[in-house]
Image 1 (cartoon, rainbow, N blue to C red):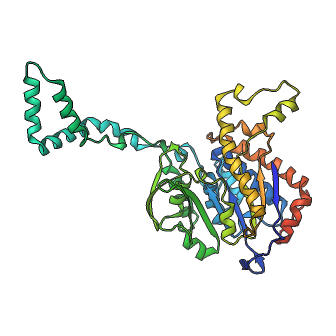
Image 2 (tube, rainbow, N blue to C red):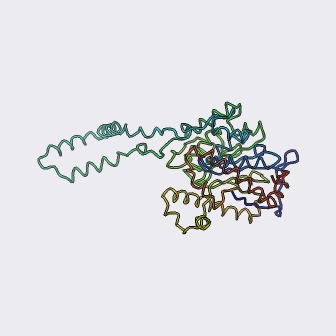
Image 3 (cartoon, rainbow, N blue to C red):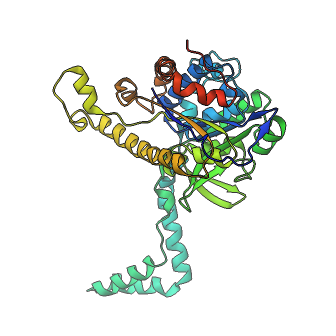
Length: 404
């Protein structure tokens, strides 16, 4: 893991949130699928073991995609270690998140079975609307020499009224309705509200699940003072609807009825949202970062290879990480220079030479435990190595970092 620190103490700070003499602290969790969720849990556990409080005690939580699933548990006070235990079905508070929750059957795949019936229905309605068409078809087909141009004319006229229904083409391989059900049932199981406003009123904690509005192309944050009208579990479902893998999620919200997809499509981490909501300290966990393949091969003392020489899988892993990581690098530069960005930021990410985590299949649930254990050890080491940079930032916000 690597840690990047953004010290914005030199900026003139506006009036910020205060609670019992403490400023507002935020956790921002980026997307990362199954392996990324495990990696974030391991890093969060390591952070808890190195500070005199826990991230579950922070006041603001922002999550997208896998980060929204984890964030929904943290926001209601679930200990990080309890989430970790749920990976192996050993948690008393959270049920096991299995393949049935992760990949639900997409009912759109049965729609093509209705195609013959639909076509017959369209033909029947067309003939009822244009009774003379049947007579013209009869004349042409009974003619000794049917004219091709007449047939083309009839087909063209019918084609303007026959529309091939979109429902015959599934927009995703699976449905992520199981994710909504998982979050909803676990909130109910622990007696926690499945509503952003109720959660804030009851606990003072703010939770934002960020999706992408497919109809506008803009980032769509759901929260008690953001987009309203949905439950927490529905917002998490929308936030984690990875295109192609999952079908888009349609929700009726305070902004109208729209289709939503994975929040990482529009933004990588949404640190800026935490700043907008008054955070003084933001601890961001981003599990996906491109590796530097040159350093890996140089370190092994072997001849350098191109990443595309290995497999299409590694090629895809790298492209995905380049997309997410490059956007975050640009955002970090902006956070340093923007005079309106007041929050101090601690960004925790995988090392560019972390080939072990890079090779963990992001969509494989079995990688969660491996990723969590790996991230725990590397994060603790990085917190020790970066003590002189991180400790002053945390101390400014009332948190003590130990060296062990």
